[in-house]
Image (cartoon, rainbow, N blue to C red):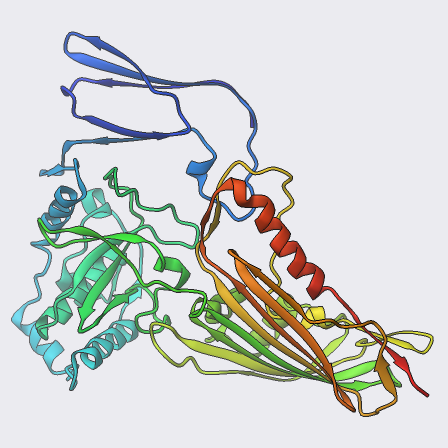
Length: 474
């Protein structure tokens, strides 16, 4: 929507206790009077804004003003928000009285024999216990938006929100001599980034940071199904505030690089040239954040029927396919998990014929085909938080040597600062094999790079769209 006129007016009676941070905004008009100071921000004749592709960070688009105090008090707890360390100290104070596990509770926990041979295995054991015995319920009353439930309540009632479950897990680990840190974060694939230069209290989630020898484990304590230590697109690749009393600090969560996030597909297509149909076997492997592709991770616990419908709804392998077999693989690995599925189906309309020519469309079997931006100009940065690699092999079994490739299939190699791409096609006596590799780098790129970025993706899409045309030699 367009905005003719909008104003934000703040009257500060606290003698310079107000802090603010703005973006895409003019400096405020400041008027000082006896006993107060008035700040006014104004926006006039603003045109409608549409999101640009590869960027959903609202602060890049809108006139934004963040307000925060230096000093504050909430429910009797006085705090200082002038920097991240002081805010972390306030959170630490809120938490300091919440661990009230009794001797009976502790004896009950010790009886479960959660301690294992190594610290990492003990952490896994406790995390598994948490997943099996608790559930997430979001309840905040009063200061409960910042303060976790008491541990005794979580232990007895077997539920809590992200703060309660994370603090409860921290308390369990402490019973076994394992140090961990309650951590505040902005969670979600498109969550806003933490501003290191402007401390404020706008977090939407809490997790647990567990340093171990030569590594750090990040625990998502609200999920009963997420692999141990998996941050994924929900909390990975971003900054967070680790609470450590007066030493609280900003940290980086688990970094998932393109080499961690792999999407690999091996497809075998047995062609029936007479009936224009095919029998298809697909082996799909997903690693790192790619296990979330199209919601795959959250299908693990579903029924076979729902898994089948999920496949039919999310993959365009043909208009007339009949699934013969579908097998989901178990998730293996922890912080960088691996899984996938195998599927066998019949496609009754695999081949398009024109006279003695056969047209094959391998594009529909490729793993991830990047979207080409449509904007002609660019105002905001290009933001890619999770890069990935895609490796595809599409093998056509002809069962005859009477066909040759008519349209020349030259090798394609594209190198760019945004990623890389390779495509090649080989023909054996009775096979046609397509090899494809695509890598998209993560990063934040200046709007001036937009045309190069768009051109890179255009070249990839153009190469992916190439059909394979066969003609009969007989």
